[in-house]
Structures are given as structure tokens and as C-alpha cells.
Length: 92
Image (cartoon, rainbow, N blue to C red; front, side, top):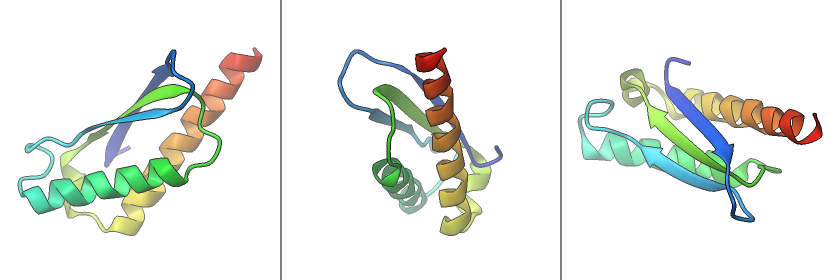
């Protein structure tokens, strides 16, 4: 979407892992980059049933100027889509 790109792929670990890429290009001020990281970590932590995949969240420039509620909805949608994709891959 216009706020984030979330990538995912299976890993050899027993749990889901999160990587964050919040560049200075996406958010000029450190306080904005840290806010985006906090929101992404919280969305990852509270999404139930994530598969043992590595997830990478990449922020886009529009994310820094957007309210937290919209960002959280965006990330929740990304994680749910990836969770469904993992389920389809696992069960055929």
C-alpha cells in the first residue's frame, strides 16, 4: 500500500522474526522513524498466529506524515495477508 511494504518468507527458526527498514528517505526525523518502528513492532507482536517466517517491514515516505491508527490498520492488513499466504503454502 502507500505506507508500507511487508515481505515474508519461511525461515528455519521455530518462531516468526521481524526486520525493520525505516530509512531517512522515508522519515527525515529520528522521532518519526522511531514512531514507525514502535508501531510496526506492536503490530507484529499482537498479530496472533504468525507462521515461522521472516518478515521485513519497509516504510514509504507517506508513512511519516500519517496518523498512527491508519498505519496500524495498514500493517495489520499486511500481516493478515501474509498469514493467509503461509497457510495456503502449508496446506496446498
